Length: 189
Image 1: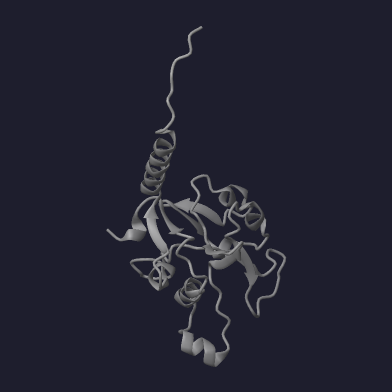
Image 2: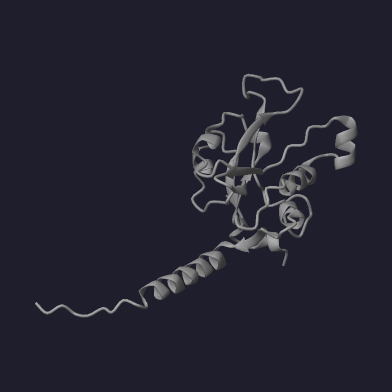
């Protein structure tokens, strides 16, 4: 089974390993672009990644769609362009009117709306189209381009339930270590 077909798969980044090198952005833009990097450079094509690296307080990491289970973007989209399908949140670009409501409600800041060069706003749309990480589902890849491109393996495709379980276990072990030295006793009334 292709890793992208698993229910609840998300791209996860370990901020401690991220160098902020932008390899994930570049690979994403190339995977979703109509040109290779070489062609884009020669023709002056603007590459648009569906993720972006943000640095703050000395830590860098990519901002990407987390494929929310409750998907506030899908709930808020007035044109029905965003929906959950097979454990992923997808954007049907042909239905998008570029209103940016999804951008405003995304809790991770992972959606952008950009107008393509040459698009003219009509009465139905402002010419912009919403874009976000789609796990490279339509690119024919086994793994998302960003996962393959990350030189430090800071980015991985994980099952959300497995991630939750490992985080719970790590937190429980941390709490057990912290409370190991405390002696709890009953207080007599």
